[in-house]
Length: 133
Image: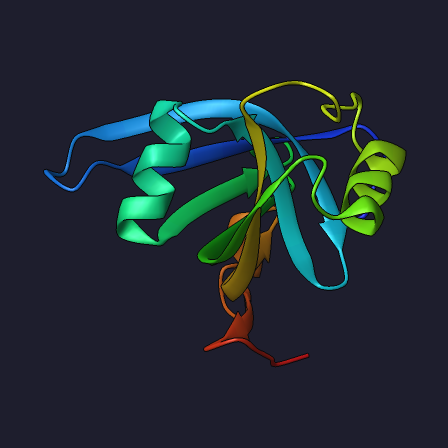
């Protein structure tokens, strides 16, 4: 599911003071990392850079994947040609060439997935950055 083309993700962050923020963004899954493109001065970027964590939700409520992620690095959209090409190939838009945009490269620390209540047991697929399945 994470490597699906044209996939969107809900990105939940919090300010250093704890104010919550939730936005939908395009997602690319590149070399085991979640990559999102945002304006460098956006609330999402500021929160992720300050707190270094976020929670991502992919899919509908009956087939959801939740990822607790940690900021690995921030990259200008034109600074890493391979990352830019990978993002553009998977996401539904290409931010390269847009002034002020960055990629947030997010390393998953925990991944959970489930469809129904009977799948709640065993829903943790990754813990502390290690795949369990």
